[in-house]
Image 1 (cartoon, helix red, strand yellow):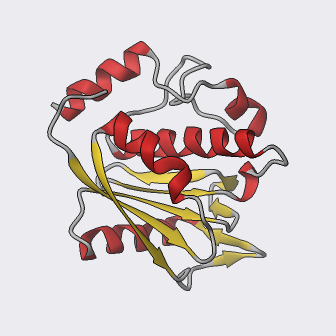
Image 2: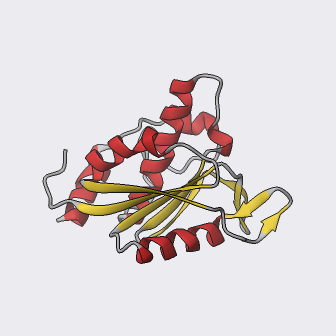
Amino acid sequence: MILVPPRSFLLVEFGTVKAADLVEGHLTELFGLLATTVRAETPEVRKKAWQLNAEDLLSEVLRLRAEHSKDFALGLSEDDLYIPQLNFVFGLASHDGRSAVVSTHRLRSDDPSLYRERLLKESVHEMGHAFGLGHCDDARCVMHFSNSLQETDHERKELCGRCGRALMSLLL
């Protein structure tokens, strides 16, 4: 557990997704956050077929973070997300905006515990970026870049020692 003054944290559930309760405890403990959850309608954003533009959805998370006067924010959506450079993304973070968004769409599983673990990993990964962490070379670290569920499933849901120390220095 991190021993720094708690920071305020907004969890945004877009549309019909119900996932905040699956990640709140782990994120608040790992990053030293005090969480508030809100539900919001999915905003009108650019689309590519059935997918939503992750950058546009992240902009809404940034807006809601400011509106609610929170230090950090994470948006959760059931919609499949993309960015122009990639066919899909599990999530996206804004380093300078202290916010992130994660899609549950590709993380689904018939096994509820596997779904929760994937959602935790992606949420920690994106919030790690929101706190200023980059990608890690350690394939087991949650901050390692993953482009498939196999890679995500291989990662731990915690930071490696190096990323943990980097986070501590960013928090202090």
